[in-house]
Structure formats: structure tokens, C-alpha cells
Image (cartoon, rainbow, N blue to C red; front, side):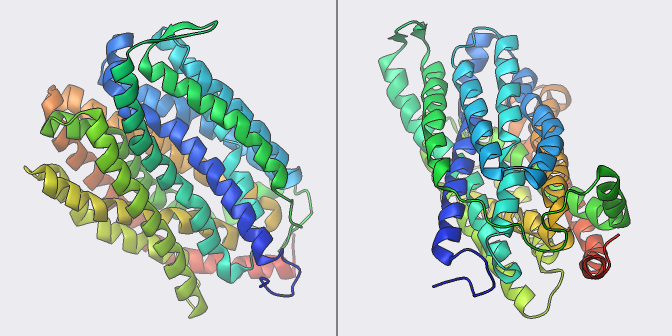
Length: 443
């Protein structure tokens, strides 16, 4: 079966591209999120506190991920997207392996910066590749399937990481050729780095689709990109910051939920990895694909703001969940409520980048996607984990109060998203019309 006869790649080829890119995204999130399960051994070995640990989890990665993302997004609009992604995978995999060789805090910090720089190459190019592989009415689903990598990667980081930690901890320190003696947590980073380098070969199977849509194949000056984004500034601001609030809640909770289980309920990292990893992998994937399918279904019925609207519905669904789960005295009920929490917080992150593709000319998609990633990553990953840690360290000054830090930070973030996404529906519809006008008469 083919997408249709309008020149898009066949369904088989298009979905193969999505599958390979999704696996790359999975690897990137395993590399990114495995750190959340290793808080206690890394804190112990590097002699650091929660706030310093949160900088490794978030800001050190996010700052350079976002800064490098915008110029790499422009590369994605003008050069080989497949080649850009392959180079990025090699770079972040080498940096991940280097994390496993760090002996001091500043060394680990530099390596995490390297992971962020390499991963910045992936998503702007991937969104552009997928948008050129599928017609508009199927893009939200396709991008949502790619974005499942967030939750498969995070889930695997916790699930497989928990099992590996149990096994590696039982073995104790390992002696490797050249490197000498390494801790169990260091061995995990070394293994992940090698896996990423080997995966790069699979990128050879990805074929570059023809660029399609308004402005396709045209190198647009930066000044024109700036003018177009300024013309759509209300949409861009409300979209980016609205979804950033949900990313703030998602990253902030994901960074500290494993430690929440350990501190509140006395679980070990292996138990947390299996339970929380399973919840994230299953309900995160279900949520993000459901969000994409819902948006495509709504779009076919004439909702030009379907992608934004799904984000609003997700925020409304998440609100009661983020209030309730941290307050549960029972680990069973905390875990039960964790499932709809993850489901709702995952729903928006296929439709959010899909929304960008629907309001931007082809020649600006990578750059607009990079700006979106800049905002949600800097706010979500860069600030979210640190905000939770700061409340724990300086408001409550008590490690056992982590549950209340999670409740306060995630609730405020979700409330912000509800307000901004609701205000963004009308401007988004206007931007869809503006793109049609620009295509008819480009500047």
C-alpha cells in the first residue's frame, strides 16, 4: 500500500524511516534518562548534593542542546538530514561513553554537555524527514510514533537500567582493559556509548525524501525566517511556552520519581526500574500515539487547531493526576495513579512538533522546530529537575519532602500550560491561514 500517488515515499519506506529514527530517539533518551536511576551511586562517588545532581540531569545537557539546536536546525533545512543525524549519534555516543570514564564532577559535567550537543542534531532533522515522507493528514500520527522514542527510551532506561544495576551491583567493580577498575554505574555508560556507535551504521538505510510544501528546496535568508516567525509570534510563543509547561512537569517528575519511590517507600533502584520503567514505556507510548491519532481524527473533521487542542486536553487530564500521586501513602496507589499521569503528560509530544510543521514553510521547518525544542528543552529539562531539587533543598531542607516538591512544581507547571494553550487556539488557526496565503504569494 502506498501513501497515495502524489509522489510521497511508499508507506513501507516512510514507516521504515520512522522506525529507524524512532530507535535513534530511543537511544538518545536511554543515554539521557539513565542518569535519573543512578542518583544515589553517582552522588556518593562524586560527593555532590541534589542540586548539583540536577545540573547533570538537566541544565548542563539542556543548555547546550538548545543553543546548538538552532544552527543545526538551519543545517537540517539546507543539507543532508540523514548525514546530520548520523554525525550527531556518533558524537553523543562518544560523550556518553566518556561519562563512564569521569572521575570528578566537572568531568561528568563536560561529558553531559557533549551528549546535549550531539543529540541536538536529531529531532529538527527527523521532524523534517518525516514531514516530507507523509501527507499532512497523517503527519501527527507519524511524528507521534517517532516521538514514542521518548517513552520507550525513558522506560528502557529505567527498566533495563534497573536490571543491569542489580546485576552489576552484585558483581561489584569491574576491571576493563586500558580503563582499569570501573564502578557499575560507569560500566552502564560505557555500554550505551558503544551501542550508539554501532547503531550509526543503520542510518545508511534511511533515504532522503524530496522536500515538499511551501518553500520547498529554497534556501531562505535568516532575515526572512525572522520576519515570518515574528508575523506568527503570538502562535509561536503560546505554542512553545504552553507545551514547555507540560515538558517542565514531565521532565521534572521523571527526573525525581525514581528517587521519590526510593525515599518515600523504601524501594531499591532495581524495583523502581522495573515498575516505573514499565509504566513509562507502556503508558507513555500509548499516550503519545493516542494524542497523534486523536489530532489526525480531529483534523479530518475540520479542526485546523487539532494539534494545539490535543495539548490542551492533555493538560486538563494531567492536572488532577499530578496533584494526587505524590500524596499517596500506599506505593500501590501511587503507581496506579502514575499510569494516567504518564499517559496525559505524554500525549502532547507528538502533536506539538506536528503543529509546527503545519504552520511553517518547508524551508523553515527545521529552524522553527529547533526553536520549539530550544524552549521546551531549556524550560522542561533544563529547569524542571532543578526546580524540584531547589524546593527540596532550600524550601523544605529535607530529602524526605521530595513528594511535596513534586506536587508543587508539577501542579504549577500544568496550570500554566492550560492557560497558555487555551489562549493559543485562535492564533494557531490564524497561522494556518497565513501559511496558505504565504504559499500563494511568498515574500
